[in-house]
Length: 455
Image 1 (cartoon, one colour):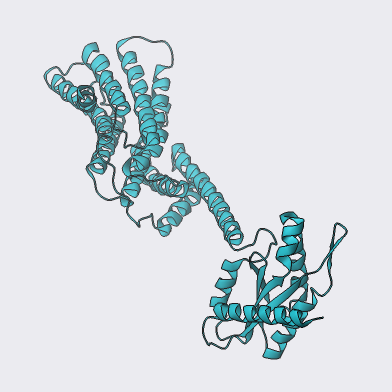
Image 2: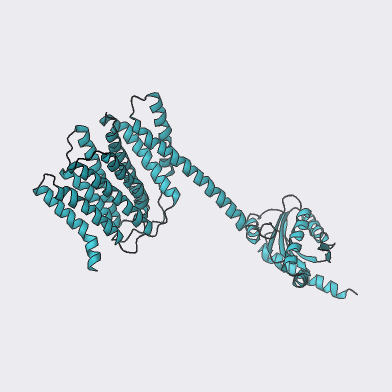
Protein backbone atom coordinates (compact mmCIF):
# COMPACT_ATOMS: atom_id res chain seq x y z
CA UNK A 1 0.00 0.00 0.00
CA UNK A 2 2.83 2.42 0.92
CA UNK A 3 4.67 1.58 -2.32
CA UNK A 4 1.54 2.23 -4.36
CA UNK A 5 0.91 5.57 -2.67
CA UNK A 6 4.53 6.56 -3.22
CA UNK A 7 4.32 5.59 -6.91
CA UNK A 8 1.19 7.71 -7.25
CA UNK A 9 2.25 10.89 -5.47
CA UNK A 10 6.07 10.87 -5.65
CA UNK A 11 6.30 12.33 -9.22
CA UNK A 12 4.10 15.29 -8.24
CA UNK A 13 5.94 15.81 -4.96
CA UNK A 14 9.32 15.85 -6.69
CA UNK A 15 7.93 18.27 -9.28
CA UNK A 16 6.84 20.68 -6.53
CA UNK A 17 10.30 20.37 -4.98
CA UNK A 18 11.93 21.04 -8.34
CA UNK A 19 9.77 24.13 -8.95
CA UNK A 20 10.72 25.51 -5.52
CA UNK A 21 14.39 24.89 -6.24
CA UNK A 22 13.97 26.58 -9.62
CA UNK A 23 12.45 29.64 -7.93
CA UNK A 24 15.10 29.99 -5.24
CA UNK A 25 18.07 28.74 -7.29
CA UNK A 26 17.37 29.74 -10.92
CA UNK A 27 20.86 28.99 -12.25
CA UNK A 28 21.17 25.55 -13.91
CA UNK A 29 23.02 22.91 -11.89
CA UNK A 30 23.78 19.25 -12.49
CA UNK A 31 21.90 18.20 -9.35
CA UNK A 32 18.79 20.18 -10.16
CA UNK A 33 18.60 20.28 -13.96
CA UNK A 34 20.20 16.97 -14.87
CA UNK A 35 19.67 14.54 -12.01
CA UNK A 36 16.45 15.70 -10.32
CA UNK A 37 14.75 16.91 -13.51
CA UNK A 38 15.18 13.59 -15.31
CA UNK A 39 14.58 11.59 -12.11
CA UNK A 40 11.04 13.02 -12.12
CA UNK A 41 10.48 11.52 -15.59
CA UNK A 42 11.85 8.18 -14.38
CA UNK A 43 9.57 8.19 -11.34
CA UNK A 44 6.62 9.03 -13.60
CA UNK A 45 7.46 5.94 -15.68
CA UNK A 46 7.59 3.82 -12.50
CA UNK A 47 4.24 5.31 -11.48
CA UNK A 48 2.75 4.14 -14.77
CA UNK A 49 4.00 0.59 -14.13
CA UNK A 50 2.38 0.64 -10.68
CA UNK A 51 -0.97 1.99 -11.93
CA UNK A 52 -4.11 0.00 -10.91
CA UNK A 53 -5.09 -3.12 -12.83
CA UNK A 54 -8.34 -1.59 -14.14
CA UNK A 55 -6.28 0.14 -16.84
CA UNK A 56 -6.09 -1.07 -20.41
CA UNK A 57 -2.67 -2.81 -20.66
CA UNK A 58 -1.92 -1.28 -24.06
CA UNK A 59 -2.62 2.25 -22.84
CA UNK A 60 -0.20 1.72 -19.93
CA UNK A 61 2.45 0.20 -22.20
CA UNK A 62 2.32 2.89 -24.90
CA UNK A 63 2.08 5.78 -22.43
CA UNK A 64 5.11 4.32 -20.64
CA UNK A 65 6.99 4.15 -23.94
CA UNK A 66 5.98 7.74 -24.75
CA UNK A 67 7.18 9.05 -21.37
CA UNK A 68 10.38 6.98 -21.47
CA UNK A 69 11.19 8.20 -25.00
CA UNK A 70 10.77 11.80 -23.93
CA UNK A 71 12.92 11.08 -20.85
CA UNK A 72 15.73 9.71 -23.05
CA UNK A 73 15.58 12.87 -25.15
CA UNK A 74 15.62 15.05 -22.04
CA UNK A 75 18.53 13.19 -20.47
CA UNK A 76 20.58 13.36 -23.68
CA UNK A 77 19.86 17.08 -24.07
CA UNK A 78 20.73 17.78 -20.41
CA UNK A 79 24.00 15.88 -20.65
CA UNK A 80 24.98 17.88 -23.73
CA UNK A 81 24.46 21.11 -21.78
CA UNK A 82 26.84 20.16 -18.95
CA UNK A 83 29.39 18.08 -20.81
CA UNK A 84 31.15 18.63 -24.10
CA UNK A 85 30.17 15.85 -26.50
CA UNK A 86 31.56 15.62 -29.99
CA UNK A 87 28.73 13.46 -31.40
CA UNK A 88 25.25 14.19 -32.68
CA UNK A 89 23.62 14.24 -29.26
CA UNK A 90 21.11 16.95 -30.25
CA UNK A 91 19.87 14.88 -33.18
CA UNK A 92 19.53 11.83 -30.91
CA UNK A 93 17.67 13.96 -28.39
CA UNK A 94 15.22 15.31 -30.98
CA UNK A 95 14.55 11.85 -32.39
CA UNK A 96 13.80 10.56 -28.89
CA UNK A 97 11.49 13.53 -28.27
CA UNK A 98 9.73 12.78 -31.57
CA UNK A 99 8.99 9.19 -30.55
CA UNK A 100 6.80 10.52 -27.75
CA UNK A 101 4.03 11.35 -30.21
CA UNK A 102 3.28 8.08 -32.04
CA UNK A 103 3.17 6.25 -28.70
CA UNK A 104 0.92 8.96 -27.23
CA UNK A 105 -1.40 8.87 -30.26
CA UNK A 106 -2.12 5.20 -29.48
CA UNK A 107 -2.15 5.44 -25.69
CA UNK A 108 -4.39 8.47 -25.10
CA UNK A 109 -7.64 7.24 -26.76
CA UNK A 110 -7.32 3.89 -24.96
CA UNK A 111 -6.61 5.56 -21.62
CA UNK A 112 -9.65 7.85 -21.83
CA UNK A 113 -12.46 5.32 -22.40
CA UNK A 114 -13.49 2.51 -20.03
CA UNK A 115 -13.29 -0.82 -21.81
CA UNK A 116 -13.15 0.98 -25.10
CA UNK A 117 -11.80 -1.09 -27.93
CA UNK A 118 -9.61 1.05 -30.09
CA UNK A 119 -11.19 0.83 -33.51
CA UNK A 120 -8.85 1.51 -36.38
CA UNK A 121 -11.43 3.72 -38.10
CA UNK A 122 -11.85 5.96 -35.04
CA UNK A 123 -8.09 6.34 -34.58
CA UNK A 124 -7.61 7.06 -38.29
CA UNK A 125 -10.43 9.62 -38.25
CA UNK A 126 -8.87 11.37 -35.25
CA UNK A 127 -5.43 11.32 -36.85
CA UNK A 128 -6.70 12.55 -40.23
CA UNK A 129 -8.63 15.37 -38.60
CA UNK A 130 -5.67 16.30 -36.40
CA UNK A 131 -3.13 16.25 -39.20
CA UNK A 132 -5.45 18.14 -41.53
CA UNK A 133 -5.93 20.85 -38.92
CA UNK A 134 -2.22 20.96 -38.10
CA UNK A 135 -1.43 21.30 -41.82
CA UNK A 136 -3.47 24.51 -41.96
CA UNK A 137 -1.83 25.89 -38.83
CA UNK A 138 1.64 24.95 -40.02
CA UNK A 139 1.05 26.48 -43.44
CA UNK A 140 -0.85 29.63 -42.53
CA UNK A 141 0.45 30.53 -39.07
CA UNK A 142 3.73 28.86 -38.21
CA UNK A 143 5.11 29.42 -41.69
CA UNK A 144 4.80 33.15 -41.09
CA UNK A 145 6.58 32.94 -37.75
CA UNK A 146 9.59 30.87 -38.74
CA UNK A 147 11.97 31.76 -41.54
CA UNK A 148 14.76 29.39 -40.59
CA UNK A 149 14.62 25.96 -42.25
CA UNK A 150 17.48 24.35 -40.24
CA UNK A 151 17.12 20.90 -38.69
CA UNK A 152 16.61 22.33 -35.22
CA UNK A 153 13.73 24.47 -36.40
CA UNK A 154 12.34 21.50 -38.30
CA UNK A 155 12.01 19.48 -35.09
CA UNK A 156 10.56 22.46 -33.23
CA UNK A 157 7.88 22.81 -35.90
CA UNK A 158 7.33 19.06 -35.95
CA UNK A 159 6.73 19.04 -32.19
CA UNK A 160 4.26 21.89 -32.48
CA UNK A 161 2.36 20.25 -35.33
CA UNK A 162 2.23 16.91 -33.48
CA UNK A 163 1.02 18.71 -30.34
CA UNK A 164 -1.88 20.15 -32.30
CA UNK A 165 -2.73 16.72 -33.68
CA UNK A 166 -2.51 15.23 -30.19
CA UNK A 167 -4.86 17.84 -28.75
CA UNK A 168 -7.38 17.15 -31.49
CA UNK A 169 -7.14 13.40 -30.85
CA UNK A 170 -7.68 14.02 -27.14
CA UNK A 171 -10.75 16.14 -27.83
CA UNK A 172 -12.07 13.61 -30.36
CA UNK A 173 -11.59 10.75 -27.89
CA UNK A 174 -13.11 12.82 -25.10
CA UNK A 175 -16.19 13.41 -27.27
CA UNK A 176 -16.79 9.64 -27.18
CA UNK A 177 -16.60 9.49 -23.37
CA UNK A 178 -18.31 10.98 -20.35
CA UNK A 179 -16.46 13.47 -18.15
CA UNK A 180 -14.19 12.00 -15.48
CA UNK A 181 -11.28 13.13 -13.31
CA UNK A 182 -8.99 11.00 -15.48
CA UNK A 183 -10.19 12.81 -18.59
CA UNK A 184 -9.56 16.19 -16.91
CA UNK A 185 -6.01 15.18 -15.93
CA UNK A 186 -5.17 13.85 -19.41
CA UNK A 187 -6.55 16.98 -21.08
CA UNK A 188 -4.68 19.27 -18.66
CA UNK A 189 -1.47 17.29 -19.13
CA UNK A 190 -1.59 17.49 -22.92
CA UNK A 191 -2.42 21.20 -22.84
CA UNK A 192 0.47 21.92 -20.44
CA UNK A 193 2.83 19.92 -22.64
CA UNK A 194 1.61 21.69 -25.80
CA UNK A 195 1.80 25.21 -24.36
CA UNK A 196 5.36 24.54 -23.22
CA UNK A 197 6.33 23.33 -26.71
CA UNK A 198 4.85 26.45 -28.30
CA UNK A 199 6.54 28.74 -25.79
CA UNK A 200 9.83 26.94 -26.50
CA UNK A 201 9.27 27.50 -30.23
CA UNK A 202 8.58 31.18 -29.64
CA UNK A 203 11.76 31.51 -27.57
CA UNK A 204 13.75 29.80 -30.31
CA UNK A 205 12.32 32.15 -32.93
CA UNK A 206 13.33 35.17 -30.84
CA UNK A 207 16.66 33.59 -29.91
CA UNK A 208 16.05 34.03 -26.15
CA UNK A 209 15.71 30.40 -24.98
CA UNK A 210 18.06 29.39 -22.18
CA UNK A 211 18.48 25.90 -20.83
CA UNK A 212 16.95 25.54 -17.36
CA UNK A 213 14.46 28.40 -17.63
CA UNK A 214 11.24 28.21 -15.61
CA UNK A 215 9.05 27.24 -18.59
CA UNK A 216 10.83 23.86 -18.75
CA UNK A 217 8.66 22.82 -15.79
CA UNK A 218 5.69 22.68 -18.20
CA UNK A 219 6.95 19.50 -19.85
CA UNK A 220 7.34 17.80 -16.47
CA UNK A 221 3.90 19.01 -15.40
CA UNK A 222 2.33 17.47 -18.51
CA UNK A 223 4.08 14.11 -18.01
CA UNK A 224 3.27 13.98 -14.28
CA UNK A 225 -0.43 14.69 -14.95
CA UNK A 226 -0.55 11.95 -17.60
CA UNK A 227 1.06 9.49 -15.18
CA UNK A 228 -1.30 10.49 -12.38
CA UNK A 229 -4.38 10.16 -14.61
CA UNK A 230 -4.06 6.37 -14.81
CA UNK A 231 -4.63 6.11 -11.07
CA UNK A 232 -8.25 7.19 -11.54
CA UNK A 233 -11.14 5.35 -13.13
CA UNK A 234 -11.52 5.77 -16.90
CA UNK A 235 -14.52 7.44 -18.46
CA UNK A 236 -17.71 5.65 -19.35
CA UNK A 237 -18.09 5.33 -23.12
CA UNK A 238 -21.00 7.28 -24.56
CA UNK A 239 -23.47 5.42 -26.74
CA UNK A 240 -22.94 7.89 -29.53
CA UNK A 241 -20.25 10.30 -30.57
CA UNK A 242 -17.92 10.32 -33.53
CA UNK A 243 -16.09 12.91 -35.57
CA UNK A 244 -18.53 14.23 -38.13
CA UNK A 245 -17.83 12.82 -41.62
CA UNK A 246 -17.87 16.35 -43.04
CA UNK A 247 -14.86 17.29 -40.88
CA UNK A 248 -13.01 14.19 -42.10
CA UNK A 249 -13.81 15.09 -45.71
CA UNK A 250 -12.59 18.68 -45.21
CA UNK A 251 -9.37 17.42 -43.60
CA UNK A 252 -8.72 15.07 -46.52
CA UNK A 253 -9.52 17.84 -49.03
CA UNK A 254 -7.03 20.18 -47.36
CA UNK A 255 -4.01 17.97 -48.09
CA UNK A 256 -4.09 17.88 -51.92
CA UNK A 257 -5.02 21.56 -51.90
CA UNK A 258 -1.96 22.44 -49.84
CA UNK A 259 0.28 20.19 -51.91
CA UNK A 260 -0.93 21.92 -55.07
CA UNK A 261 -0.26 25.31 -53.49
CA UNK A 262 3.24 24.19 -52.42
CA UNK A 263 3.96 22.98 -55.97
CA UNK A 264 2.81 26.30 -57.44
CA UNK A 265 4.44 28.55 -54.80
CA UNK A 266 7.32 26.60 -53.21
CA UNK A 267 8.91 29.78 -51.94
CA UNK A 268 5.79 30.72 -49.95
CA UNK A 269 5.46 27.53 -47.88
CA UNK A 270 8.21 25.89 -45.77
CA UNK A 271 9.11 22.32 -46.67
CA UNK A 272 7.98 20.86 -43.33
CA UNK A 273 4.34 21.54 -44.27
CA UNK A 274 4.62 18.66 -46.72
CA UNK A 275 4.98 16.16 -43.83
CA UNK A 276 1.48 16.46 -42.27
CA UNK A 277 -0.17 16.86 -45.67
CA UNK A 278 1.37 13.68 -47.09
CA UNK A 279 0.68 11.86 -43.81
CA UNK A 280 -2.97 12.90 -44.03
CA UNK A 281 -3.28 11.55 -47.56
CA UNK A 282 -1.56 8.30 -46.55
CA UNK A 283 -3.92 7.82 -43.60
CA UNK A 284 -6.89 8.66 -45.81
CA UNK A 285 -5.79 5.96 -48.27
CA UNK A 286 -5.40 3.45 -45.41
CA UNK A 287 -8.84 4.43 -44.10
CA UNK A 288 -10.42 3.97 -47.53
CA UNK A 289 -8.79 0.54 -47.88
CA UNK A 290 -9.97 -0.44 -44.41
CA UNK A 291 -13.54 0.72 -45.08
CA UNK A 292 -13.69 -1.18 -48.37
CA UNK A 293 -12.38 -4.32 -46.68
CA UNK A 294 -14.88 -3.98 -43.83
CA UNK A 295 -17.71 -3.45 -46.31
CA UNK A 296 -16.69 -6.56 -48.24
CA UNK A 297 -16.43 -8.58 -45.04
CA UNK A 298 -19.79 -7.28 -43.87
CA UNK A 299 -21.36 -8.22 -47.21
CA UNK A 300 -19.83 -11.69 -47.07
CA UNK A 301 -20.94 -12.17 -43.47
CA UNK A 302 -24.45 -11.06 -44.34
CA UNK A 303 -24.58 -13.50 -47.24
CA UNK A 304 -23.20 -16.34 -45.11
CA UNK A 305 -25.67 -15.58 -42.33
CA UNK A 306 -28.54 -16.12 -44.80
CA UNK A 307 -27.12 -19.06 -46.73
CA UNK A 308 -27.45 -22.78 -46.03
CA UNK A 309 -23.95 -24.27 -45.82
CA UNK A 310 -24.89 -27.68 -47.20
CA UNK A 311 -26.82 -26.73 -50.32
CA UNK A 312 -25.79 -23.12 -50.91
CA UNK A 313 -29.49 -22.15 -50.96
CA UNK A 314 -30.96 -19.32 -48.91
CA UNK A 315 -31.78 -20.43 -45.35
CA UNK A 316 -34.82 -19.94 -43.09
CA UNK A 317 -33.69 -16.46 -42.04
CA UNK A 318 -33.53 -15.33 -45.66
CA UNK A 319 -36.94 -16.83 -46.43
CA UNK A 320 -38.54 -15.07 -43.47
CA UNK A 321 -36.92 -11.79 -44.53
CA UNK A 322 -38.30 -12.23 -48.06
CA UNK A 323 -41.79 -12.96 -46.67
CA UNK A 324 -41.86 -9.54 -44.99
CA UNK A 325 -41.57 -7.97 -48.46
CA UNK A 326 -44.08 -10.42 -49.96
CA UNK A 327 -47.22 -8.54 -48.89
CA UNK A 328 -49.66 -7.41 -51.58
CA UNK A 329 -47.90 -9.56 -54.19
CA UNK A 330 -49.83 -12.14 -56.19
CA UNK A 331 -48.20 -15.45 -55.37
CA UNK A 332 -47.91 -18.35 -52.94
CA UNK A 333 -45.69 -19.90 -50.31
CA UNK A 334 -44.83 -23.57 -50.67
CA UNK A 335 -43.39 -25.73 -47.88
CA UNK A 336 -41.80 -28.98 -49.02
CA UNK A 337 -41.00 -31.94 -46.76
CA UNK A 338 -39.23 -35.01 -48.15
CA UNK A 339 -41.02 -38.35 -47.69
CA UNK A 340 -38.84 -41.37 -47.04
CA UNK A 341 -35.66 -39.40 -46.48
CA UNK A 342 -35.13 -40.35 -42.81
CA UNK A 343 -34.97 -44.14 -43.46
CA UNK A 344 -32.46 -43.54 -46.26
CA UNK A 345 -30.39 -41.28 -44.01
CA UNK A 346 -30.47 -43.82 -41.19
CA UNK A 347 -29.58 -46.72 -43.50
CA UNK A 348 -26.79 -45.19 -45.58
CA UNK A 349 -25.46 -42.56 -43.16
CA UNK A 350 -25.40 -38.77 -42.97
CA UNK A 351 -22.83 -38.36 -45.74
CA UNK A 352 -25.15 -40.09 -48.22
CA UNK A 353 -28.06 -38.07 -46.85
CA UNK A 354 -26.17 -34.82 -47.45
CA UNK A 355 -25.41 -35.84 -51.03
CA UNK A 356 -29.10 -36.57 -51.63
CA UNK A 357 -30.11 -33.20 -50.16
CA UNK A 358 -27.70 -31.40 -52.48
CA UNK A 359 -29.12 -33.24 -55.50
CA UNK A 360 -32.68 -32.51 -54.34
CA UNK A 361 -31.79 -28.82 -54.11
CA UNK A 362 -30.44 -28.94 -57.69
CA UNK A 363 -33.57 -30.63 -59.05
CA UNK A 364 -35.88 -28.18 -57.28
CA UNK A 365 -33.82 -25.20 -58.49
CA UNK A 366 -34.01 -26.31 -62.13
CA UNK A 367 -37.80 -26.49 -62.01
CA UNK A 368 -38.38 -23.02 -60.57
CA UNK A 369 -39.65 -20.14 -62.71
CA UNK A 370 -37.76 -16.87 -62.90
CA UNK A 371 -38.08 -14.77 -59.73
CA UNK A 372 -38.99 -17.68 -57.43
CA UNK A 373 -36.95 -18.17 -54.24
CA UNK A 374 -35.98 -21.63 -52.99
CA UNK A 375 -34.67 -22.00 -49.43
CA UNK A 376 -33.64 -24.89 -47.23
CA UNK A 377 -35.33 -24.42 -43.88
CA UNK A 378 -33.46 -27.19 -42.09
CA UNK A 379 -33.26 -30.96 -42.16
CA UNK A 380 -35.22 -32.24 -45.14
CA UNK A 381 -37.57 -29.24 -45.31
CA UNK A 382 -37.54 -26.64 -48.08
CA UNK A 383 -39.56 -23.51 -48.84
CA UNK A 384 -40.45 -21.72 -52.06
CA UNK A 385 -41.80 -18.20 -52.59
CA UNK A 386 -43.33 -17.98 -56.04
CA UNK A 387 -45.23 -15.21 -57.77
CA UNK A 388 -48.09 -15.72 -60.20
CA UNK A 389 -51.69 -16.84 -60.33
CA UNK A 390 -53.16 -19.70 -58.37
CA UNK A 391 -53.00 -21.93 -61.45
CA UNK A 392 -49.34 -21.09 -62.05
CA UNK A 393 -48.25 -21.84 -58.48
CA UNK A 394 -50.25 -25.10 -58.45
CA UNK A 395 -48.49 -26.11 -61.66
CA UNK A 396 -45.23 -25.40 -59.87
CA UNK A 397 -46.31 -27.80 -57.09
CA UNK A 398 -46.76 -30.55 -59.66
CA UNK A 399 -43.44 -29.68 -61.33
CA UNK A 400 -41.59 -29.92 -58.02
CA UNK A 401 -43.17 -33.28 -57.27
CA UNK A 402 -42.22 -34.51 -60.75
CA UNK A 403 -38.55 -33.77 -60.12
CA UNK A 404 -38.52 -36.59 -57.54
CA UNK A 405 -40.50 -39.06 -59.65
CA UNK A 406 -37.31 -40.81 -60.71
CA UNK A 407 -34.66 -42.19 -58.34
CA UNK A 408 -31.26 -40.84 -57.40
CA UNK A 409 -28.31 -42.98 -58.48
CA UNK A 410 -25.47 -42.53 -55.99
CA UNK A 411 -22.49 -44.89 -55.81
CA UNK A 412 -24.47 -47.44 -57.81
CA UNK A 413 -27.40 -47.33 -55.40
CA UNK A 414 -30.92 -46.42 -56.59
CA UNK A 415 -32.64 -44.29 -53.97
CA UNK A 416 -36.24 -43.06 -54.30
CA UNK A 417 -37.89 -40.40 -52.15
CA UNK A 418 -41.03 -38.30 -52.51
CA UNK A 419 -42.14 -34.88 -51.33
CA UNK A 420 -45.22 -33.47 -49.59
CA UNK A 421 -45.97 -29.85 -50.44
CA UNK A 422 -48.09 -27.36 -48.53
CA UNK A 423 -49.47 -24.64 -50.82
CA UNK A 424 -50.86 -21.35 -49.41
CA UNK A 425 -51.90 -18.32 -51.41
CA UNK A 426 -50.69 -14.89 -50.37
CA UNK A 427 -54.20 -13.62 -49.65
CA UNK A 428 -53.45 -11.60 -46.53
CA UNK A 429 -55.29 -14.01 -44.21
CA UNK A 430 -52.79 -14.56 -41.42
CA UNK A 431 -49.29 -15.96 -40.99
CA UNK A 432 -48.20 -17.46 -44.31
CA UNK A 433 -45.50 -19.63 -42.78
CA UNK A 434 -47.80 -21.15 -40.14
CA UNK A 435 -50.59 -21.77 -42.65
CA UNK A 436 -48.16 -23.34 -45.14
CA UNK A 437 -46.80 -25.57 -42.38
CA UNK A 438 -50.32 -26.84 -41.60
CA UNK A 439 -51.00 -27.35 -45.31
CA UNK A 440 -47.77 -29.32 -45.68
CA UNK A 441 -48.66 -31.66 -42.81
CA UNK A 442 -52.12 -32.12 -44.28
CA UNK A 443 -50.52 -33.03 -47.62
CA UNK A 444 -48.15 -35.45 -45.83
CA UNK A 445 -51.09 -37.10 -44.01
CA UNK A 446 -53.05 -37.43 -47.24
CA UNK A 447 -50.03 -38.93 -48.98
CA UNK A 448 -49.57 -41.47 -46.17
CA UNK A 449 -53.24 -42.45 -46.36
CA UNK A 450 -53.03 -42.85 -50.15
CA UNK A 451 -50.02 -45.15 -49.81
CA UNK A 452 -51.86 -47.18 -47.16
CA UNK A 453 -54.64 -48.01 -49.63
CA UNK A 454 -52.22 -49.11 -52.33
CA UNK A 455 -52.17 -52.91 -52.88
